[in-house]
Image (cartoon, rainbow, N blue to C red; front, top):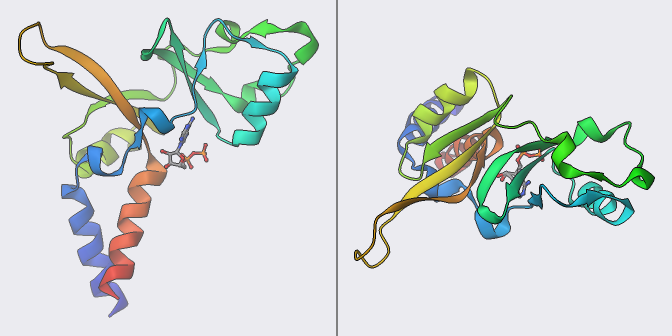
Length: 156
Ligand code: ADP
């Protein structure tokens, strides 16, 4: 029945790992903190349609914060203001989780506030150098909800 299917779906999503459902870094729409919010960039932002944009400095794996698109409501593109001025640096809503964390735990974290998490993993290279953290992608509540609903559909 519908209730039973929903129950198993809700139980199973908890054990799915973050890496299975995250949006990979290569597919993540990001901006450099040094970019300026002129017409072209603003048009691109609206065209992409995302509400949160990770902002990086120097390299794409060095994410310093988030740009909330709704903060651009009063922006005048003629002013060419740097992205930097709009970044919420690790302020509201930016969590960091591990690629092998389970969705059940991440959901608990996101429920306490925030909507997006950065996904990191340890990069051991070929084992000859020091291991380092690497950002692998992003995960939002939406990605978790999709797993919950997806399970439900398969069960039916
Ligand atoms: P939005 O509110 O911006 O549409 P959601 O949280 O509803 O974002 O997520 C919808 C999907 O888009 C998810 O798969 C999420 O991982 C992805 N997503 C969210 N923001 C970005 C972004 N800046 N670049 C690429 N994918 C994103």
